[in-house]
Image (cartoon, rainbow, N blue to C red; front, side, top):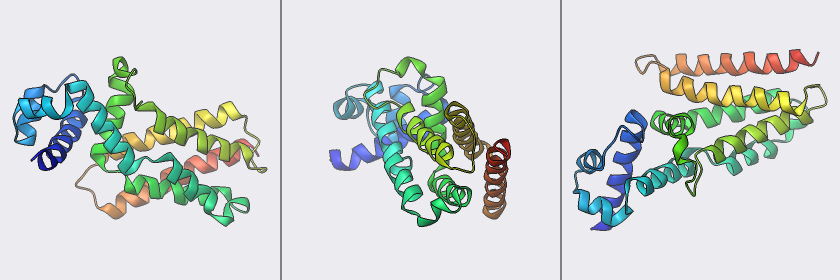
Length: 198
């Protein structure tokens, strides 16, 4: 029984926390969204905070694994010849694998729920790790003369902007238009990085 209810509760939690934030959702809302009782919710997750944490863990495991991001980046043999092109492919692949609800939940956790920073799984950790990976890649490229701190600012701006874009891009637009827009956005960002060092 618990094996069927737990995933339903997690899915409802991801959707509701993403839409309304941690403080905009009650345990009653969560139970109703999962088509279960509040008692089941408390029995499986103890409290709302633990459920929020499990929802974050689920989102991170699905779409924001920094180790996978790093592997994709450095596994590519072309990184030495064309850092920008390889970075663009990896960033685009990450963006495409990111569901909108995951982007919304991470953004809620990152900006809206600062009181939850004591969670065992920090919502900041995977994003910060990806930012660090990008900043390190930028600062190690011999063609780029950007300071490490500037590289971190640039990487932070890109990742947070793409999360925001994923959330706000009109669902009615064609997927190809979104892909084109993301390609253009990443290209302009990379041109800015490489132009700043010229």
